[in-house]
Length: 332
Ligand SMILES: Nc1nc2c(ncn2[C@@H]2O[C@H](COP(=O)(O)OP(=O)(O)OP(=O)(O)O)[C@@H](O)[C@H]2O)c(=O)[nH]1
Ligand SMILES: [Mg+2]
Figure (cartoon, rainbow, N blue to C red):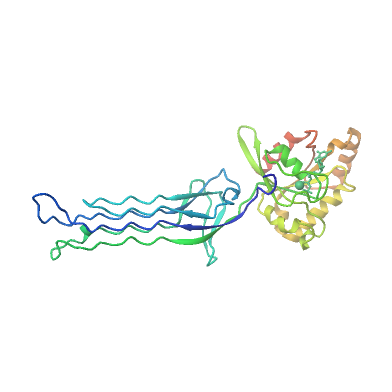
């Protein structure tokens, strides 16, 4: 898969296991004519459990999971032996996964911590065996409880928390190329606008085994907030990023203007986007010689205030470590 490893919505049909039935058994042994009741209890049906996993970033691994079924509880047996519990099924999800009941649209809960476990469909309780029902008046009860039924439903998993750093830029600015050199993601790259049609996520490895997540989204054009291009729909994917990385290519006619158009589109989409930390990078700066770069720096220093900027080149591998350092510093 080279495109669209980003999945933030899945629907799954789940069913827990039903409880095993209790046993109606009367003890029989040589020389003991009338043994008492000794039917054991049924086992519990398996639960469906959601578990948070901080190493997952999307719901991609569940994209093709349509059903999840837990095991049924075993029936109780003689000699008060209890049936085995049904096997639980665990669904691992990224932190920030919101779980909804599809039918009622009710939010059931949210998984926010690594290792956090929540039962989303409870296994049926096992029935009690007849041993429990013996009494002074009934020494040989010939009944036991059935197991409780399973729980079945469709659930929706929706991912709320997204990457740390979101890439923002016009089509063809070099966003996907940057993702491909900083992470092991393999997004499609081409010399035409709207190459990227779906968001891509990658994990940027940082010094000493640390990492952060970067999201590449389709290019944004003027009017995106009103639905032009593809940017509008995908802006929601960077709504929760803590830091936005603006890319303007070195060969842009007017860097300041391009940056301001991008900023304005974000503002129109949601003014809160402007409260995030921002970093501007001039991409494809391998196209600049030193003289041009110096000139451009002077211009940018005069024109663009209040946002740090860097020159980078994904192709020539320039300024990338500096970029990672800067992003890391902003994230922490
Ligand atoms: N010279 C040079 N070209 C680059 C650099 N980075 C990207 N390019 C080229 O720019 C073109 C667009 O790159 P992409 O990474 O696909 O751009 P994008 O921003 O993801 O584009 P969309 O997905 O359409 O929004 C490709 O032809 C790349 O090879 C760079 O550092 N230097
Ligand atoms: Mg792209």
